[in-house]
Amino acid sequence: MSNATTTAHEIPAPPPPGTADVIDEMLTGLEAPPQARRRVLTGLLTAISVASLFLAFQFKDDVGYAMASSTPTDLGDGITASPATVGSNRLVTVRARPSMAGAVTYSRVLLPGQHMVFPVAGREGQAPIYVQVSDGDRSALTRGEFQGRLIPFDAAGGRYARVGAYVHNKLDPRVSGATWLLVDGATPRSVLWAPFVVSLLLALAISDLLLMGRLLRPSKD
Image 1 (cartoon, helix red, strand yellow):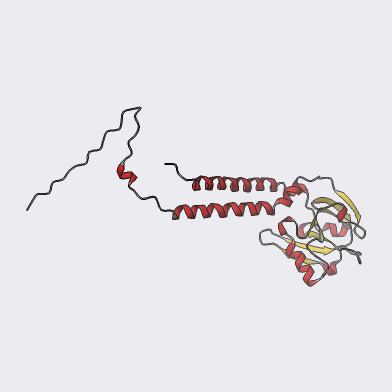
Image 2: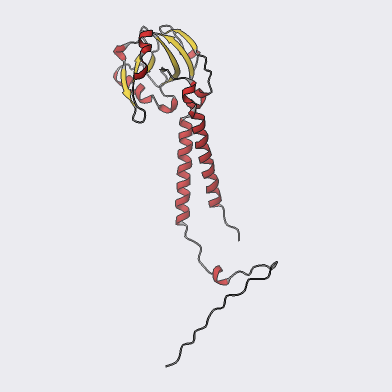
């Protein structure tokens, strides 16, 4: 039998200061790291960026209303009122009688409480106008005066679109996404959170895109 000889590898001393490092031939022979982890991270960053931009777009009407004037515009009598002359996302006041025959009540999963949506009475032959009041503030029904946010059903990121679609299918086929809805009690101050949320979403999307750009940047030799 022959005795096996063991050779110990000596660790070379670091180069003197000011001299270039010598590339280890063993390191240069290693295979490139797997790309699966990079692909997963890139896909995750892309999904987060797209979702953030989508949510920011949904809140664009709320941002506009948060910056609107807090002085209400008087639309006058609901029978002859013309919301188109005022425009969307404005704080308005209207005097009207509710038509309870066309009223619907609904609730949202994420927001507590119930809301009633009803048409303004006496607008036969004209485009309908709807009003929404919440359970905690139905005193406007007895006052006959409503003040709040004026928007179409399909505005505000589609928040009221399903209500408009229900009214269209079940009660009044004249109702569409462009039908005016006055959300009683909704002032510009009630959506002051919107600019901060949109800024946060945009910052998140931009930071993810920048990180993804660095991740996909080809490495220098």
